[in-house]
Amino acid sequence: MTKRNATFTILLGGFFMSFVGLMMKMIIDASGFQILFFRSMSLSLVVIIFACIITKSNPKTFMKRLDRYDLLMGIFLSLAFATYVFSMLYTSVASTLFILGITPFLAAIIAWYYLKEKPKIIVWVTMIVATTGVFLMVSDGMVFGKTFGNILAFFSALLFAMTLVVARYSKKENVLGGTFLGGAFACLIGLIASLLLNHGLLISSYDMSLSLFMGAFTIGLGITLVTTGTPFVPAAEVSLLVLIESVLGPIWVWIFLSEAMTTFELVGGILIFAALIILARKNDNPNLRKNINS
Figure 1 (tube, helix red, strand yellow):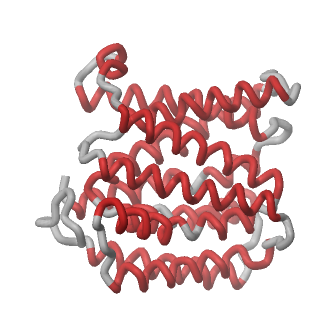
Figure 2 (spheres, rainbow, N blue to C red):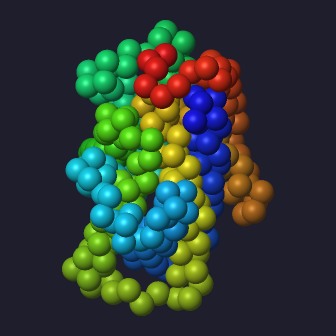
Figure 3 (cartoon, rainbow, N blue to C red):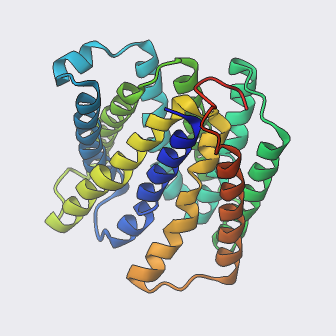
């Protein structure tokens, strides 16, 4: 896969993931951990089906091919999912989203240290522009003083950045094994937490349908596309491209739920979109291949 095609694949994954906010707002009664359980279950199913198709193997063979990199990716990704849910419970959604906006910087620093992927000036500029855009989009709803939730959001960003770096470090062209394990481990976390908190797993058919759909076709398909393109694009740029989710998310809520966008959201979205266009044009070179540090 060329870097240009990988960039498009990651952007497409971010497009699917942008519907998560809409799905979450449409759920009525289910708790965060119940949602985590059901969406992670369908996520894992979609990933393993997709992986078996592209590798022309069966589930048994796919499972046998899992290695230590897949295990490490799975642990980091599942914990990123879990801390994301926890952060939503202990701080505002806006604060969580802003803190997650630093993921590109964390990925850049970690990848620079471990992979020697030194980002060019243009990448640093686009990261600053995009992060400014995220701040503007969520500034109205940010809550200061909720330290525990903000710390969890930071760890979610850090864990997602580490997931991307491990995917790059593995030098594997297919890291769907780690994505599958991430969903499977997150499903287990959702199950255990729901039982320990006495939430149980009995939810309405409406909430269950939305959770399963979200796991399969928004997070599942989205994260599958993102991790498919990850081995061919530097980690910092992957996390930047995924920010298209922040631009499109409020638009779907506006279209389907009639929640008007604020001026700050519009300006912030334009800044993020501009940064993504710059990055996409930079990567529009069919001769750039995997592991080329740009």
